[in-house]
Length: 475
Image (cartoon, rainbow, N blue to C red):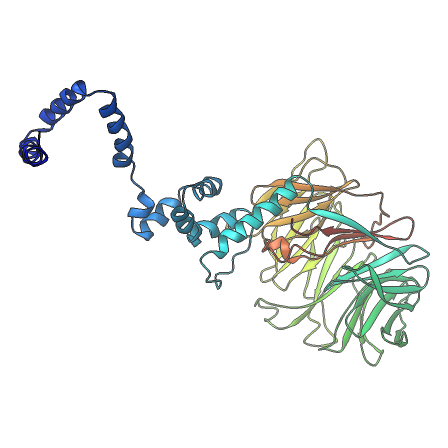
């Protein structure tokens, strides 16, 4: 058949075919297929795939594509990125999908970042870090060597670790390099706190002292306690220093003058922790911006309005057992909104506006540690593994840091599961908890790809060195 005649015939057949019913069309196709040879069937097979399989990501509006992609898990999305350049471009630009995936991994989200491709890169970085945590490969260790006697006092801030020792010295270390920045002669240190210019020490000789880093000179000597000073805190804004002692007293000092302004009494046990912090919530007893002093002993936490007047009276006394059957650990946290402390049975959190306690404990065949986290629900109980002597180091909105005699643990508070652990050496144990501390704490509220650096944990060792656990750099 000539080409012209064929085209005329094909037009007529097409008109007739379009006038048929669906059933008649199907019968016509079946008949034509039965008459076809191998060449025609191969041609039909090759073209049917193109006709039937449409690239919906390419054809759909971008908003609809993003909506459909939200139903896929991140690993499937990464596989879909390999289909074509167009798919990779569309999927990578789906900001909401990758932000959600990052949140599910415990990552903090900065909504101010406008780069459409940013969050897929963040997710790839996040899964690498979480894989390291799951494989127990996220950390590395280091040691600080320089003291010649027991190291009892530790304090960390902004990449610097201060150590106070029975060798009558205090040293300031750069954690990232392991180098000693300053070393000065002091008394025996039971507690240390520092800033860029000065070091404040509480001592077993019943005194508190203030030292200048640059010269090593003692600028103030605070005398008045009749027992060892286990905790110190200060405020340059108020020009006030506070100290807690084994003589059951809390003293308030003029930081620059060195004089005792007041002695706060009422404790019946050693005062092992004092915290000076600005209040961030309003109540009948205090307002935002007021300075609050917390002092803790073995059984009680006392609250003092130190910012309003020096001759203050105790606002409130908090305890977890009326019969003193539960002892508190001295790792007391106060952020201006909540007061948190722990015991051998669990962690206790008070709302600072109402002083309501959120408390719950359970009993297993072994020691059980419970966390009560205040959120939209009245109480959330999180049980850690059945490990004896488990203790709290730090907690946040997403993660908690714990340890026992053998391991450091990271718990995901959303799933109530331990996601990583790290072996610890035989460190020097202390009932008052001063021979170990947590390092950087911002990652406990969620990782962000930048805050998982630096110090995680530090403890003093029997050989007078300091054992450090550090975040390993991203692979």
